[in-house]
Length: 139
Image (cartoon, rainbow, N blue to C red):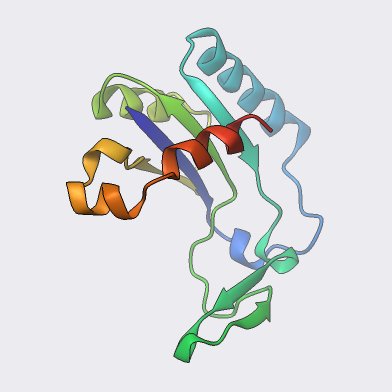
């Protein structure tokens, strides 16, 4: 089972461009990341720049509209993520609980939808999806 652990730092929605965590926070997080790697459960991880450096594309009426960050209506934003592969939701929760997160951070845990989770008609409509996934993972 694959799970995405999404780091949601409170206040990050208003962070200025170039905002970065402290060296101490990064050092603690690196120890945690190394433990995920040594356990063989880590598939991917990345930190994300603040929303002030991003953009949102909405599709109201079928027409794309680009809005540059920051986003006034944002209450919670993702600051980074880990993709892990474990045997159960409980194991994923155990890993999330080990994270050296601060008091202003929340981790949202979401299971990845696997191709086999979908009914046959959806799998047929998504024919070629698994090949796309594999080619995307080679980069």
